[in-house]
Each structure stands twice: as structure tokens, then as C-alpha cells.
Length: 266
Image 1 (cartoon, rainbow, N blue to C red):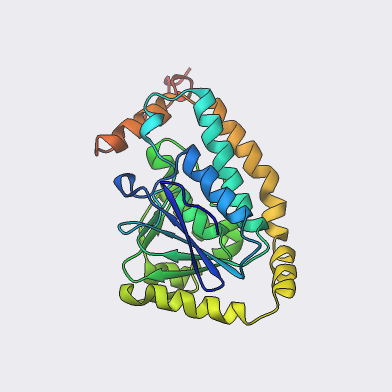
Image 2: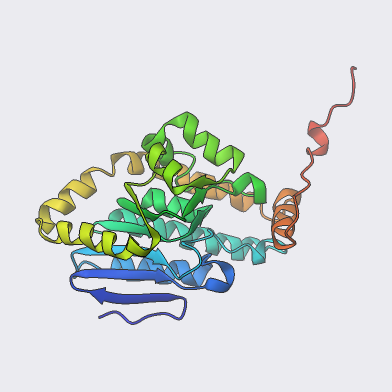
């Protein structure tokens, strides 16, 4: 039995392990420590049949924690990016099926967690969407590449570029989730799917899962290069303004770089 970190709760329900992101004050947004704890819990889950990832009441996951981005340091952001990539990789390389039980907002990196999971079941009140360009970032660990395979390139760019919010019903129509159920029935529905999986061959489920990673593996280099570009942009005016605007609950005011602004005909 795994022990629980203060921000990551781990418990067993039969042959299924539930991993709960538990930082309600920041809507279960992950920092470096939470991402590492989630990765460790998933990496240690070969002793169960199914893994479920969910959030504490109030949200599924609001993505990466933005508090440090208003005054970022390259070292701290590099650690956050590295730990978040480890968390996503842990989901994809876990030998067991990983189900996202989306009990609230899945925003930014939280939406990318849904992309990374093998299956996703959403409560009717759940919402989905990317936040990158709205908050001075870019969704390079799934939303700009693998999500296009799942829901189509144009739709994926719509989510990644326009930063709109989508209801659970819309997410189902897009193909981002497998099922939508009333809020009160989410846990029961997830356990029903988990029970189905538990009755199947774990060996051949693992083969099925790992062989399905061809598109994830093909995009994996782009994750690293994308995160490298984000590191180079640490402290940029757009990152600072985006984070400050988010924390101050106001619209961000982004401007063109001076070298890109029109100087008139010459």
C-alpha cells in the first residue's frame, strides 16, 4: 500500500488504485512536488489492475501552478516543466490502464492530463480547455500534438489557441472523453469501467496499451523541444503579464515585441 503525500492522496478500492490531486486552494493545480508525487504513485502501480486519476472536490486539475510565474526563475521553471513531463510519461508508460475521473475543471495542463490518460469519464459539470496563450505559456506536452490525433488537428488548434471552455457534453462530442455521467454517478461509473478492465488479461491489456503509444512516442521529442523553448522564454513580458493577470483576475494585456511592430512604409 502506497502512502499519501499531503497534496496527493492514494487509496485502494479493490484492485483499483485511486490517485487524487488534493490542493483545493489552487484548484488542484500541480507544482513540482505534486507532479513528482503523482509520477511516483503511478510508477509504483504495477501491483494493481487499474489506476484512476481524479481531483479533490472543486476541480479536476487547473494545470500548472501559476503563482511562481509572476516572478519566475529559469531553474524553478525548468524543474516544474521536467516534473510535469515525468508525470505525463508515467501515465503513458504505466503498464496498467489509467482512467481520468474528471470531476470538475480540467484546464491547461489539467486538460493535457486528460489527453494523456487512456480513458476519461467526466461528470456533467466538468469543463475542459487549454489556457496557454491566455496566461503567457503554450501547451506543448500533449495539446499541440497528441490531442490533434485524438480530436483532429483543427479542433486541437481551436482548443490550444483560442483558450475557450468546453462543457463535458462538448468534450464527449469532440472525442476528448469516453463518457459523461451525472456528477453523483461519476465514482460508480468509473468503478464499473475499472471492474470491466479488472476482468481482462493484464498482460494483454499492457501489450494493447504500450503498442497504442506510437503517436505519443512520435510526438515525444516535440515535448522536450517545446519545453526547452518555454525555458528560454522564462521571465518574458508575456509570461509575467499572463501570470499577473491571472492572479489579479483581470484580462491580460499582451503587446507585440518591438521588433515585430509596424514602423510604417520605408
